[in-house]
Image 1 (cartoon, helix red, strand yellow):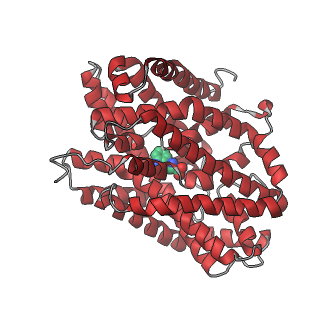
Image 2 (tube, rainbow, N blue to C red):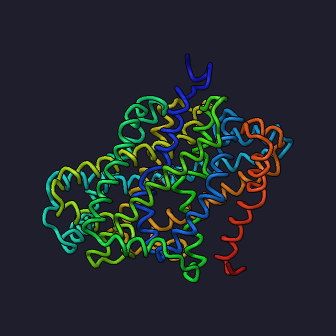
Image 3 (cartoon, rainbow, N blue to C red):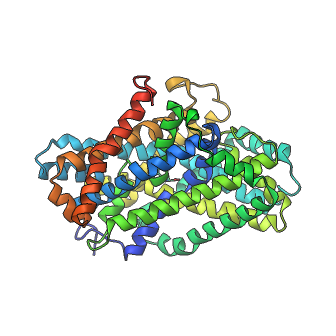
Length: 453
Ligand code: TRP
């Protein structure tokens, strides 16, 4: 059976959950969430983030799955088709097309960081952390950043791994591996957390992450937290829509979204607690930025019994989690190229991957030779790509999808696809019509200084 005859579907509900959770759980949880929390003042960021997961993330995840399964198409053509059915403008396709582009922009930096993780598997295997203190671990990290050829090599390896899977079709191969490796990642995180409860400063980490202090919520932190809720759940650019388009009709969208959001948030919080326990125990700065996990966890691996094995396994599992996320980033683009018959799946995957790889070279250089280059808002290349996608494109994409599902589509179609009973549907629809869009717009406006939150 070829793709042209029949759209492929997931083997079961669990494969969909695994694949979508695989997309959601990645570097965003383990690398990005801790350092963003550190940079944005701890608990203020965490609280807004959790609020956004509840009020925007879960309802929007349901919305994206619903749109994808209803349309049975890639995001761009899907939005256009749904708009057509609802008698709305064909320009809605731009929501899908922007997502296609956002995916390539995100992969450009995602694969560079994925490359760092692969480099660290080797460091751990080579016992480079044994007996290391903060100074040595910091040195190791800075040496890695300074070497453009080495960063380029690992960036290339990670990109090729990603493209290779997508070229074969996402619902092949990785499923079985995910079933074992994702739970193992969770297990090893718990193990390292136990270590940092015993040896680190867990109390201060709890306090830093959870003591409510609303006075510290700045507009900048609120936007970062909302953007990260989108990033972490892979929302706003059509990934969940594409995955949803391969989902069988009888599966409950609400329950599935809830499971995925809980698993995703749990992994981020676990990683955060572990890392801040180590940060405070070793008198490090929570505001270290993107290098945070690479400058803290190795200290623990260097000191704990069996640290060589635990460290290697940890970075291996993180690399795997990053891999199952990165393949989702180019899937919307590839689905679009192939369903439009512009090219074969294999060519589409290599073309998309190559574009991201080229842009990724600029990201590699932004950590060394081009570290002085400033783009949007005086940010460097890496920060520009990250902020442009995470804080602007994803929330904007999500906003448009919420408006589309809440105001443009016929409610009976939406309810039918979601399979919700009346009361639950009304509650969801209220959130998607009012609460999520207003929250997103308010955060944008507060950033522009137009309102105060
Ligand atoms: N959610 C992934 C992570 O946390 C990254 C990711 C994969 C993503 N696909 C996405 C982010 C789509 C935004 C949109 O690591």
